[in-house]
Length: 93
Image (cartoon, rainbow, N blue to C red; front, side):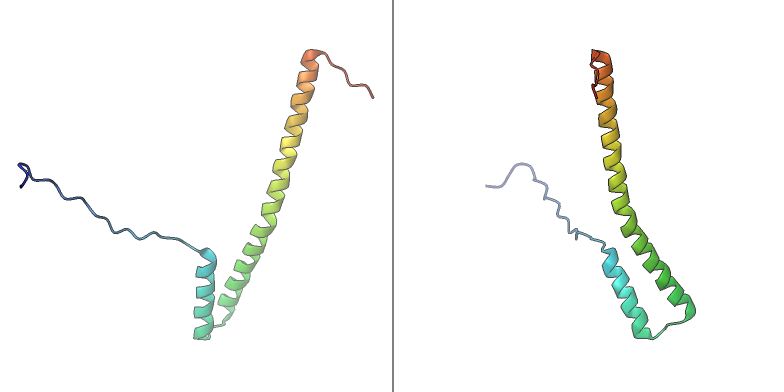
């Protein structure tokens, strides 16, 4: 038996998920450059700059973690000292 009212059809989407891989893009660009045989001074300097930037970004990350850990320790010590000051507890050495 047919329906009294026409039912709308469901919408269908065809969305392909996208993922950007910077390392893969860099490797494809290097392969393209090597394939062309272009190794002039400007491209060499560009590759050198990219290499320095990658190394620098790797060196900076661990440093930020240690700074963050140090901040947590200092903050914890300050909280403990504040609580001791409020409660009147003294440290005996």
